[in-house]
Image (cartoon, rainbow, N blue to C red; front, side, top):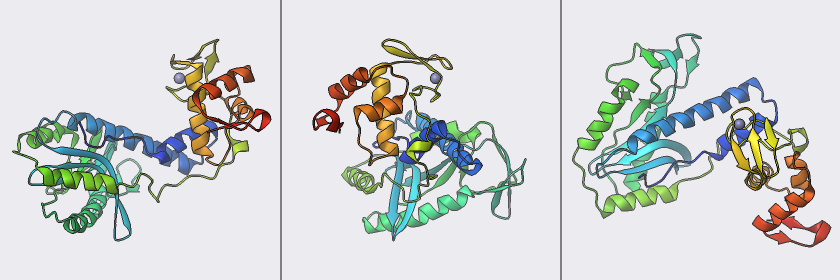
Length: 302
Ligand SMILES: [Zn+2]
């Protein structure tokens, strides 16, 4: 079990909502798709680290700051003698390495060099650990988790784990003798407490309530292709089913995240959900699950 589990970033969740409810620019669409793919890759890596039996601390998704510089570590593993930060990449397709840069083989487009990202995060992690009184060596690695990834002309000694090496590498981590003590635990707790849940580099396209498409969406595939029955929603696209109550509450959460300043009212949620036939149903769900403030037409929910 990881000491800190991974959850979807607020940036990913908001971009997903916006992608459903408005037309994103090509650039934003690409960024959103990269966020989704990146997250899937991290989850794929988590499935491997979850099988480690050795005495190790696994901390997923750390966003830290040192000297006013923010840096992210996709997975950090603490062992008795070594700290392992991993930069996880879910790139798919063929790439090549040339003059310390990565390029897509197909488009020749340069992509962000993950080795640079790793170097940067390690160079900030080192002094941070020193400040905490920890002098263990740091062995960072870039992990390519997608089996459809190929890298041509890769430097032989680069700290890279390829998809074909994942299993062996996990085996190595499992077998290297490790016995953790209270100092390791203290370090893990300190790092987790320093985690910043919101990156200041999150970017969102500008959006307004009026421009977003209203309606309940499917909890599985996020589409609007739902049929509303008496008690349940059924998605025509993926077959996913959900209770109306849970769908409405999910929608309330979505509205709150997109518009934190907007008051949650029966009328507001009725309009936002769009497909629920009666306001009474909405009111009943809100009354039963949220705290109501004020009376009658001034009533809102928190
Ligand atoms: Zn669906």
